[in-house]
Length: 375
Image 1 (cartoon, rainbow, N blue to C red):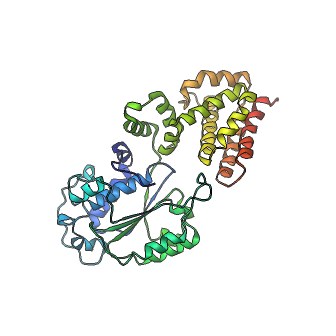
Image 2 (cartoon, rainbow, N blue to C red):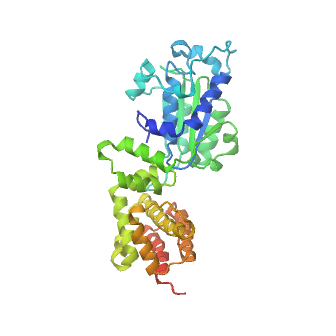
Image 3 (spheres, one colour):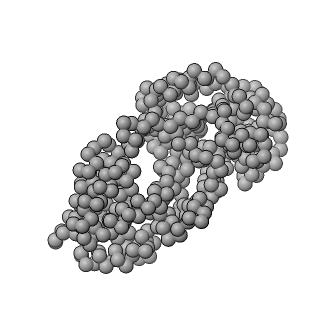
């Protein structure tokens, strides 16, 4: 799903260190590369940064626009005409933001994107499973390639999760990227760029976003939740997210806290929580992965408490309970490492179409073994 404006200022600030050099390069070279690849961990804001970039690209007062933002005055950005002598720019890195006042910005704020094509992977038979980009959407796109921009200086195509293109779809878009139409810009996002064809990679400028820090995630959550902000939950979610904003947002859901409560209850009374957890984890792929994330964060807390003197706890609110449980069960480092390795293996299986309830049982069995293991 395409993000909506306004994009969180805290999220933009978190990625400024990567974004600004890109703007400065364009400003210095007076050339806009037609293909940008935004990569980084799942859920760190790649789509949001793509939309923010487009909003600024369309802005009449951006570094990409000629006077009034007319396309004919910016054709040289694509190398189609000689560049005029570079003028001294009045932009500083902190000013690479849309003005919010010009006609282009007003259209964007009203969600009127006539020159933007946004392609998402198609969901499979089970919407909970990850979808793929299939060739049909790219065939439809090709029928529009002869058209120039309607209102903005450029037409922009965003292919989100481009690492989930089928081989047919990838080969289809490759032909377009080899000879991009005049005044068209392509933006791809990918969590795993190694899954893209090398020939596609070779045609892209890569913007690699860093994982977000816990404090950056906390700031974005606080900004987005407003009066509904729950500070303690947000702190736990920010620390447990491992750099991913979307993961933190999952952790804030009421269902996530119910799963966490069941997992904590499972440590002391597995028989009571067994079926409840299996039902919760098998609801969807998202719930399965969320459960794995929670197990990993709990057992990582326990392991780090053994090996790090000043460990900063993810589940700070459950610290005393977890330490007492670990001591009462005589849990060793080796047993904690065993659980974490099992979680890593089950995470791989969670992306496949398997019997969800059976997989949920397979996830919980190592937790039982750790509690009943005798040296």
